[in-house]
Length: 173
Image: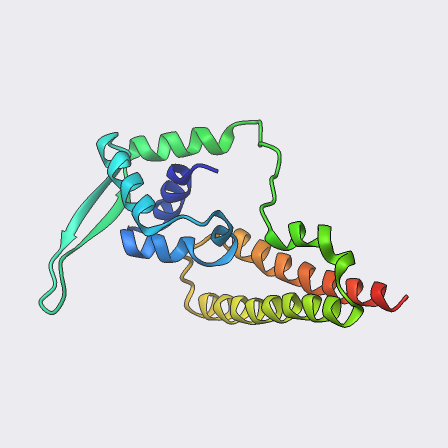
């Protein structure tokens, strides 16, 4: 995934500060990509150099000034071309839990159950958080991230919960 297109997509719906962009990348489905604060600002600088984004400085009395980034027409055109590309690359899942499954057979049944329970608990917590955010955003009609990707995140968390329940049942058989 290209960070540049993610940033362009995020600010195409609503102008944001670099920090706001970073925060959006740390939640929901975008979290999986693991971008750092410095990567976001480096990419914003490149996008600015290429005239794909612009910013205005907002001065604050009690805090440092902040840059609020917006997408340019050129940026919208580049983003649209990328979205309309017919080829979507093969999905690659980078999930440590999947790697750990290669050694799950070494665990005692109670250890394996604890492993699955910890994943279940994490995902259940994430699901509750997402559903709360979703409700708040629907109430306020404010969408920093696409409702489609929010729903994908919610369903992904639910899939993990369902899978953990199934995996624990397999241990009992």
